Each structure stands twice: as C-alpha cells, then as structure tokens.
Length: 283
Length: 345
Image 1 (tube, rainbow over the protein chains, first blue to last red):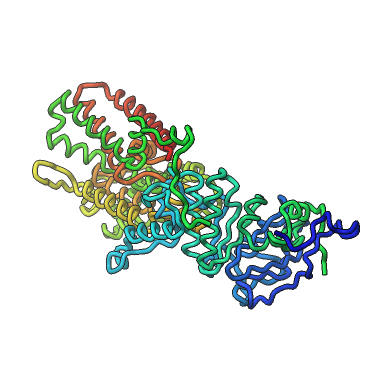
Image 2: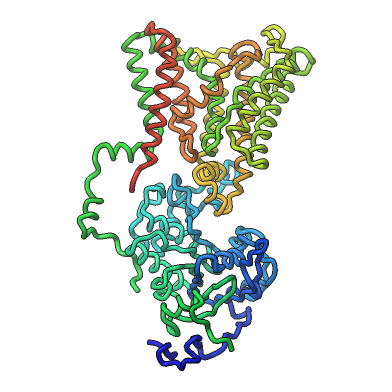
C-alpha cells in the first residue's frame, strides 16, 4: 500500500522526520489551476500566513488539513478573495490575479461552499441555487417587466442535482429548511459545482453530518472531480481526507508543514506532522 | 465509487419511525408552511360569516365599501411596513413620514402657491428622502432599525409640527387634485374612492415585484439570512437601503391618499398608524423575524382589522372589544408563525 518506509523501519536519526523521498519542488504556475506563492497575512502581531506556497493541479482533490489556528481558513480566504494577502502572489491558470472580494473570485469561476452553507432557509432549492444570479425570462417579460424565469431555473436546478446523483431531493420548490443536514449540504455543493468553471472549495463539508450523510457528501466530491473540476477540501476529518484526496497540504503555525499523499503517509503520520510531533524532511 | 447517492431505504426502527404517517396536525403545519396566507384568509372568511350571522347588514355592499375606505390608509402603510419587516427590520416612522408628506403637499399648495401636482410630487419626494435617511442610518451607521425609526419617528413628527405650525389645512384651502384620492367611485353596488384604487394598484405592483423580480428574492434572502445573502454576492446594504427608500415612497403616496380620505391635512391624523400597520403585517402572516410573508397576507391582515371594527360595531359591542380582538389576533398570528417555522422535513 505504501512505497515509503514506515517509522519502524527508520534509523534513530530519521525517526524525527518522515521523508517524501524527493524534496518538494514548486510547480510552474502555468501547470496549475491555482498557485499561491509566498503568501503572507498578518493580523496585528498575529501571523495568519507566514509565506505559504500552495498548488492546485487540474482534476485533483487537494485536502488542506491543520489544527485550529494553523492557517487553513486564512489560506483559503486569501486564495478566494475573502481576505487580501499582505504580500505574495496568486495565479489562476498561470495568470496572476488580485481578488479584492469573494465576488471577484466567483466571477473568475471559483465557487466556495462555506461551513455555514450560505443558504436562505425559507427560500426553496431552486431559489437558493440561483441566489444572487437569478435568470430573467426571455422577451419583454424579462427585459421590461424583469420577471424571473422561475420555471427554467427550477428545471436547471433539478438537472444540477440529478447530474451529481442527488436522488433524495426531488421537489425543487421545497424550502431548504425542510431538508436534512446532508440534503442542505448537497444543495450548496450542487450550486458550487454548477457555477464553478475553475475549481470548488469546500470548507469542512462533513463537520456537521452523520456517517451516512458524510458518505454521500464524499461521493459528491468524487462526482465533482469526475467532471474535471479540481476541489480544495478543508477538513479535520482524517479518514475522509485519506479516502478522497489526491494530495494533502498540511497547514501548521501559519506555514505549510508539507504536502503529502494518502499513498506516501498514514493518517497517524499526517496527524503527527500536523501537530508538530514529527517534521517532513526538507531537501 | 458508486455514481449515484442511493435513495434512503429505512432499515432501522428509528428510520421507519421517521417515515411514519404524518399526524393531521403536522399536515396542517406543512400546509401552512408552504401557503402562509391560508391562515389570514381563513380568519377573514370566518369573521365575515360570523359577523353576517350576527347582523345581516354587515354583508351589504355599502358596509363593504366603508370597510375598504377605512382600511385603505393603514393597508397602504402596511405595504411599506411589509417590505421593512421582510428584511427582519421594523419601521416605527411610517405614520410620521406619511403625515410629513401630506402636510408638505397641503401647505405648499395652499400657502405657497405651488401647483397641486408639483406639491404632491414634492411631498412624495420628501417621503422618499425620509425613507432613504432611515435606510442610510440602518446600513451606513449600522444601527438597529428599531432605534433608527424610533429616532426618526420623533424627528419627522417634530419637523411636520414645526413646519405646519401645528395647523391643519382644510378642504377649501387645497386645490382639488390634492383631494383627488377622496373622489367617490361606484362599481356596481359598491361605493369606494380613488384612494382605494390607488392602494390596490400599489399592492398589486409591490406583490408582483416581490414575487417575480430578483430584487424581491434578494429582499427575502436578506431577511432570512443576511450573512448567507452576502456570501452569495447579494449587496445586502444596497438591498436594505432600497427597501427603506421604496417604503418611504409608499408612505409619501399614502400621505396623499390620507388627504383625500379625511379631506384635510392634519398633523394629528393617523396617530396609531405605526402600531396598526405592524398589526396588519403580523396578522397577515409576515414573520417579524424576516424572510417570510406576502403583500397579499398584509392586505388580508388590514382587511381583518377593518372587518372586526365594523363587525363589532354592527354587533352593538363596545369598541374596546375591537382592541381586545385585534390584540388577541396578533398574539395568535405570531404563535402560528413560531409554530410553522419549526416545520420538519
């Protein structure tokens, strides 16, 4: 299952480090969907990001893990316009971008599923799917009377849900507050997957869910990947991360403690790196 | 990895329990949840039937015409109030703005020689500005709507009194266009006024905009969960500012309707407008917590209050019982709202 030696096979000297074999080489931003280089963000004396580099490659699921306060959220916010980094560069498809607001990132094709889901509970599924980018009817009804294309949006919302294999919700006119936690998550994920053209960010999508619903959401993440959209998954949950991700970016103390893969390391080692019990070999 | 999420098949006792038949009460809860105007509609129909049984004169076209005329001003103000309450706000300055607008119109026309139509327009613009001031204080200064409108209630009332010198402007001093809303119209057996028609048109337009436009959806989303609305890219501050400004426009027009209704522009008119407009909105099923409610519900709510007023008086009951009944309806309406908000999947 693994190609690298486990701790038990290492010498005393090597035990404090877990080797990747090769030193981490930064990719050319032209080969990535998203790259962050030397990102720094401070809040007064508190260092949020301490010169972080990050890459997201086409078609991959990149997990970002880390302890509370390690800088996961700050990193994601700096990449998606929710925070403006003090220093450093962000590249989207090899071109440097300067997002000032989350809307800048959204209009560039980046969709974020927030932990709070950002759904309006009293509105129905279709209204939530198109919230903030409603479609008007064609002809004078839309251009003059500014009427919404409710029917068309409902149909498309249904198609988006069906495309992701979400079969438990059929009625797009159902208020979101009548849905279960997993179904609400599915609505938010389907919205992101429908409107994202570059990648999707999922912030702790399984934190509030039971085992069965967690499985369904992991399934959704795979579905997004299979459509060719890369995913950044922020999570605390090691089994989930190791089940779906291709690479794992470990945030620690505002920096990056290393990038590993589920094949190169075990969850226990990931936790050890995350908490600083061991460090990844540099160079 | 499977490509579809399997439909849930119940296999534990708890899951089977969750799929049990809904009790009749739960079904009522679900129906009210998806169609919240049912309860005010039922209350209206039942009260009309009850009052007709008590006194058959109640159902006469003449009585209905009187109810519509009596209700028109509060219903109009309640349309603006509905917009504000949908965003989880409250507007205590409704009456003050309407009075300010009406006194401005009347005094400009009667004492400053401003042509009637221009005076009306200036009065309405004053309403818009007053609403915009409320909206600016709510969005830019970040004060709670209750405090903002409590403050502007005092300020606008004071301005209206200082400007008019506390004097009312009588029917004979005003050009007829200011009184136009009081023009009687006879539709079949019903005798109503232009004011009733103006209010109805405002209600239809606002109901259409709220239900059919993206602005309407954003108003609901902002009231439902402002943070979620912000995260999906809705400019929450802009929506709020526009809501208070449109409400001000409606109050300004209502100022004109009020002159037609009473035949005078008086600083002492519609003193209870604030609470009565909130009462109509709440009885109409709009949630004080924001995000749910309709203009139709509000119109029904205003009608219910009007029906109780006339119905109880025709029944020969002391007018204090109307206050009692309205108070009771408010409490029942908000309890129903609390209950249907707890609806489960």
